[in-house]
Length: 473
Image 1 (tube, one colour):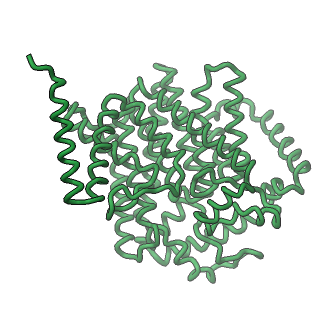
Image 2 (tube, rainbow, N blue to C red):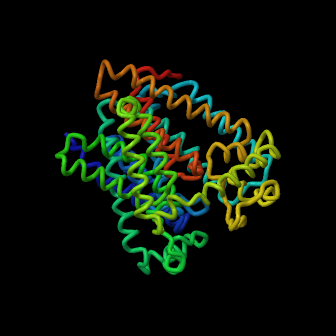
Image 3 (tube, rainbow, N blue to C red):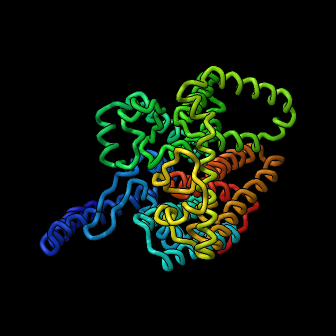
């Protein structure tokens, strides 16, 4: 009888022949193409055997890959960024659900699916009717298109058995980003970081040590993200997962990690993130707050007064209590509303706020000291969507948020009496989704590709773990 291992020399010879042909006919491009095919086959094998681990690593890849890292895997094709690993996983999804395992592919709640389609249609319409802003296509593709794909991937792949593994990956990624954030704050004058900042972030002056020295401004780390607010939003969304993952750990380790991440959110120095975290925590623990409302109100007021008098003259205190930022936001929120009326009903196009707002600055009185040439966004995801995607886009976006959050809340209410562990998971998911939503009221989170992807991943897991989510086939 012939041993199966006798085929290996033939397989090696065949591969060598194909390699030589590719090199001869296509040159370097052929080598790159063949290498990509081989790596893709290896990736498919690993995904088949270790799909849960690979999905967890995709979460880590999103959070830990620098936003500016990119490679052109195949000459002539667009660049691939570090957190685009979902593209290879989609190949696995097609193979697994259509050929290898013939799984049932779920589209989830019909309302969510409908709002996704409507939002994409509204965005596509604005792209066709208005000039396309620089990097708008890329940002929209990696934020919403890939975000929606992540939603479907985790909707179909998450189960009760692997949910805790994904939760731990989100928690570990959050802790790693926080550690890097601390290092960035500690070494803000490091020449390597300064060089990277000047090379990749020429328009963002918060990394310039000389600027910090002159203005006395507080350092805002971006932790490999596009913007400090994006890093803060991602970490805040990961905090509930950290708490869930360490709840059974020794108190010193568990509370230590939670305080470690909370400290990172503080030194991230983004007030919108602090407000989002506080509001989401209040809503998720409303019964407790209602029970102890008088005590918490007095304690909170005393703490606020103490912080005010203790830190009033520090950069930290001035940033917290200075109302200038609020006046500025009210100014460009008024401009945004005027832009929405002017570009009604289809909007001015994704990321076109920056290219159009100067034509509307005369419609509102700017606050003293505001440089109107430094405005880039409206700092409100609802308003920005109204301006850029029009009435149809903002209606779909609000419907998407409402459908996702309401159905996950409904699932939690039904799960708590039957399965407390499942109810706790849903509570964590609700908390993360609310953080993203409230952060969007004070920042343009739809421009934050990494935080938006995490939002859709969490939403997909929430629907997968929900026993009441509708399904469409």
